[in-house]
Image 1 (cartoon, rainbow, N blue to C red):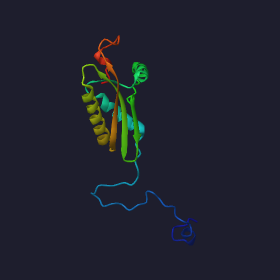
Image 2 (tube, rainbow, N blue to C red):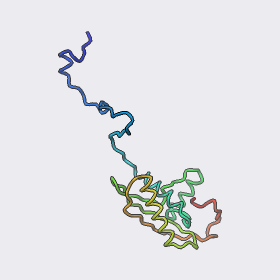
Image 3 (cartoon, rainbow, N blue to C red):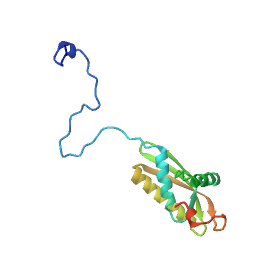
Image 4 (cartoon, rainbow, N blue to C red):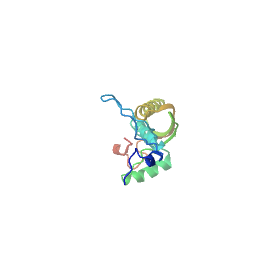
Length: 157
């Protein structure tokens, strides 16, 4: 015999609360689903790294060791877009540290300010976090001819 919800045995069994058993909203209205979103630190670092690379005058990101490892990654098409970027991410805010190498001839303060602006804008717009600070560490100046392979294609763009 199959019991239905009106039998005394079925009434004594407690019903488990369901996350999906909620009343439907009115049709035609925008739906708002409950839940939470967690954005990984690596996502914020990648957005910041891409934004910093877009600034004119930035030759590379990261210190010497990171750039050497990055060259190996580039050779096997596994570019690390977070290279030279460190982030601290809270629930609603983020702080970003970026290490850059600036092209010789570019005004370092202007490049650093543009990196700050571009990174803060990208993280704020794409990730939705308030950026409380962007620290730019200018680690080196790239002088054409310093490297054996100074092709423009080797730039971080």
